[in-house]
Length: 187
Length: 304
Image (cartoon, rainbow over all chains, first blue to last red; front, side):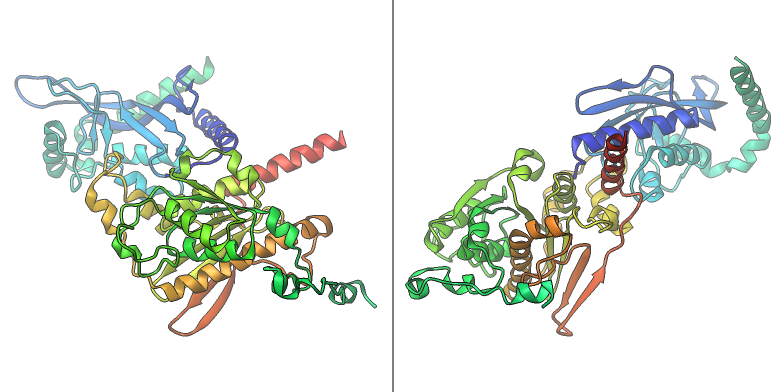
């Protein structure tokens, strides 16, 4: 993959981190500068579901916050310049999180097709938006080939997001979270 | 008499004795030609394939000082129909392209120094860009093109990119010295990005299959590469002979002419047409915008 000259790359990364700060998605003190890479953790605010281990069957809880680990390498902003790893638990056909409630070993993989279609050159602001979209609009037609993702595929084929909104009172979840945001702002 | 007319009538006095003995006599007769500039120049040539062969051949015969040739590939039998410096002798296969070109150039013109590097473009020493007068790319993929463009632009070097496909060819010239002219990165398209993404799987893991390597073989023919390689070497010589004058006076020497900076020349062998397209500078381009910002910073500092 092509690279930007180091000085320009550093400048670009600085701008990207600043824009993430502006979006209030960057986790506090999560940015680690290495010689030829920068690591950081972003918090995606979008309603998805997490799965609890339940012997009686599938138990899903709506969740608004998600942690995603990003590593920007020297190829950034070209394809392959960002390594993604989905940290927090999520029940999703296109995401295979690192932390799983089951015995399955998580990979952190995210089906990136949605990100590929998103922008000309991957800037992080649009990447964050794409990830938010991905959480709220699972794509069961293009699942990852892991047991939990396939299970999620079946689930989201049978239940559309609109059905789930009513079933789980998602608007209430959204409202709750917004109140939390207000408190943070007052602080 | 205007100043420009003066330049045209700037006759050269050549030594009579040199007429038949001096190798470079006939080219020295071109107004504006300065053989010292040519023999002091150092050209970086990225890719020693068909176009690279043509380019190196032309530059070597013109008496260029030094050529830094970069290619990590080895010769296959299917290369031999279009590479002027790979002869069809036995056992040429599996030799490194750069080694064979270097050897062939010794016969063409022993005065020219060839530095043969069997490295990936991303791994070469940045110092080499600084040493080069002109950077030329004769590669077959968008990644290497953009990479070379980025580093050449950053080090303020003229960059000449070439591409060929069947009976079609194109040349784009980039030089940051010409204000508001586009670089290769400015004109990057969604299709280019898609092509780059092809090397990655759905999860962003790099795909490394033998299949992936053989997929991108294009149809090429030596006639097109000769035309494009010829134009590319001409552009390189224009910079070598005329860039000092341009940097000093802000215009190109009338005897040497202006290179295709910020423009793309497209050759269509089917319709026998050459078209020149003006490329637009992208104000959001990572390279140009950064370099502009820094220039402005420097200007502001000077004012203070």
